[in-house]
Length: 433
Ligand code: ADP
Image (tube, rainbow, N blue to C red):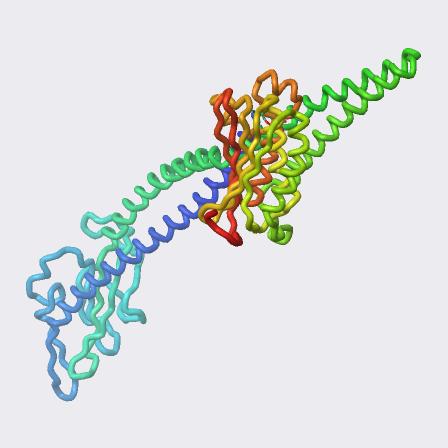
């Protein structure tokens, strides 16, 4: 499934980037052709102007008399030191052919544009093939404001064609190489893009299998107790025991399902409209009061160190209460009789800090990085006896993060643990006590 998606991603990436590349190469080729042609036109124009400068004329009997003697190629003077010119023609102002060099031209001048590209099918000229592309310019030559004739000159386009052919060859070699590299990049990027999806898919699978595993034990208890109750006639006391075990198993399942729902509902940041102004001092005081009665039952001492002043922030009070409750109940679970639990609240640089410390069994260093993972339990006698699902800390972390806060832990085995919640607050009324 993942490889298929990765292949699709790479294919679409290559296709889209490849199309852009081909269009880009086309534009570059077109630009190169235009530049080369412009260069050739400039050269042709310069040569033609040099030739036109050799035209001499005078008015005789009201008519322009043109003397082409000094015009290179057309006159008897030595030709231009170049063989690039294929033909040169001189037409009268009435567009009639007067003189030419090179291939035999039409008798009359018919062209309208200054520059023209012409495909010749004439006799082979020198070493050139019989079919060549020529660039031709036709310039009106003026003297004293009136046109005394037209000079038409042509050059072969072979250098332009050769340069473009070479350029096209490089493009045809480079484009497939670039396409290959794009494909490879697409494959690598596809892999990178798939990684978080693969991770969350694996996490979801682990989560589902853990949840099913946790549900299996209470379900089996319900089933076996119900089956015994149905099969064998029991006395009322035994019947009651079985029913009580069914109730216990159902309670355990109900807790697990509520925890799972809590995790499913509150992933990501809470919507601002669900937040209200909460006084953290009074919220924690209520919890401290509730837990101090339980502390006595377990022969534990609970110390609370809360500020006098209210510490206000934007929060969802029930969820925040749940997060602190999970930490407090763990502290109680994992602290043997005679130990102590401390609940503190203070502010530091715009953060409200809640600390739950205990003098309990502590958490081994190796387990600390995993402690907030779902269904993670430290393999100790106490945690087996406590019978939790390993979801309490994962829920606390998710709820704290839903408020934009952070949770952390420090612990020393045999000495105790300290869990710390930091919540960002713009509304702390008193700072630095
Ligand atoms: P559980 O429901 O199993 O307590 P938690 O997610 O709350 O699940 O805790 C995960 C594990 O972390 C527990 O199994 C326990 O071993 C360890 N733990 C949590 N809090 C404490 C603590 N205050 N002292 C020692 N160990 C703790």
